[in-house]
Image (cartoon, rainbow, N blue to C red; front, side, top):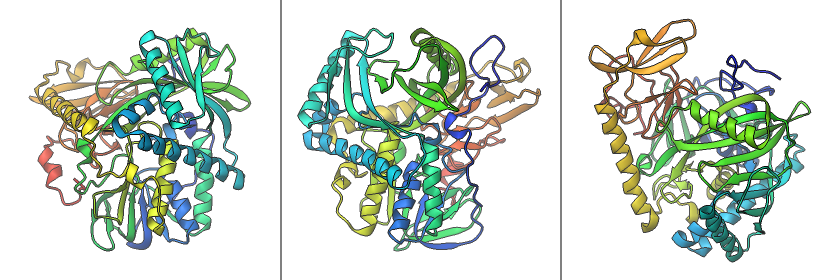
Length: 525
């Protein structure tokens, strides 16, 4: 179980998620002709696949479209904790949203956990599901006070848990808060099984099919990049960042947060449980079993996508932490992931804009997508069959709480404008000739800002650095060898192809302008 390592370094040279290895993923064709179905689902992660599973079981004709491969987005790069313990959140929700909404959020995520557990048992899914207690710990006095406040929130909301003074690691903590009866699993093993069940019930799945826009109406139609159209009674937008925003202004109401993961063989045995630090920089821990050997997942170093320090430094920080706490024998995998954070930290799940009951959206899971994505699917099913659901008002995308949403709305958009202006004023000094093999940088070429990457064979790849979403300037991410946008989190390969939206078009080779996208017919913006 060895991977190609840098000389004299433990970190693997290339990123690869453990959840994407050792599994035979089914392959599906791209959409080649127009289609009529009851429900079309855009996005093949946990929200989209679980929605398809629930809806085919209700007798609906369902089609799932994914821009690339199923489960290759955030779901394939998760920590795969199934828990309602989502960092420090319940005290904040009580203050900002009220006690009843805070309790509803807990219940929605607990019900999602129960649904996954029940499905695993009923369908005999071999996905390494195990019950675990979840711990939120503080290493400083400042954060210990916050953990105590969070414990008080648990008590007010009737959450099964409480304060403890120690955790079974070589980490000196001030306080920790346990939430009993949570879980973990192998997400892609779980979802591959659901996909087989979906196909068995007549569900249609298409990969490498990029949805770019929706024609609204009584029977909305999803338009794809290559031309074929899918008309349905209902459209579910589960594409991480919505490929279609309607009048929802989602670009102004969310930001993308990136984090990093190592899967490591340790000298000290992992004691069980799932853990996250309240302090910054955050640290998250759990174990996985690979070929009879235990690996520990060390995750953290959260920051806004495209902003902050050189990305390899984040991996190195996790390596230092792992060495200090467990002693590292080998770093087997490293990868990164990103997720979207809404203004009030509650996901947006429901009508894309008020009065459009046939176009539903799920986004903004704030890195807790295993439970929130499952809760989204359960809510979608109820909305489509016309059944009342207790969480519809809670997650409604049209909500706009004056506190903290209003303050965060201005803060987020000030940040986007700041990044937009900063990128335009930036005057890089690097030249293409100075790049080493495997190195990327922003350069000036004939007076224009360009992105250059020299691959391991010495071939130079040059792209325009203007993001094809709304025109911010991308930055080079050395840790993952990608171009990342600091405004809304779009990510591109070194050759310019889209890895993650909201951008739909690749980075161009010519000088690209924001108006090119805003005036395009085949765009959801």
